[in-house]
Length: 100
View 1: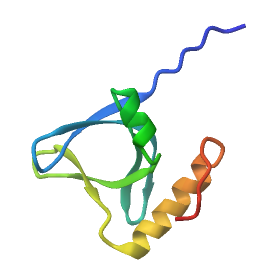
View 2: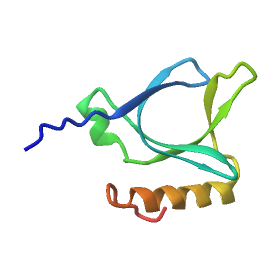
View 3: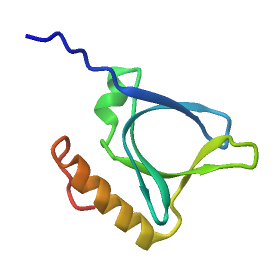
View 4: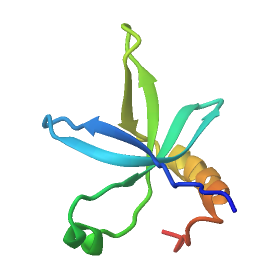
């Protein structure tokens, strides 16, 4: 029997207000449209976990001129739906999706 521990890939994201948020990176893909990441919020407090809706967050991965990586929302609804469907298929074994 192997003693395999679950070690999630955690990343910190600083929002436009300068607040840091921690996410678990579930998956990342690269398509002709760009690079994308699927994240799940990580909470410190049990109450926050209970109040969370379990929503998967899908962002596009970009780089600035200095090579710094940053994440942005996908503004194009059609692209968001396309990338969301890819992640849903890839993560179907881990999560139940309600079709929203």
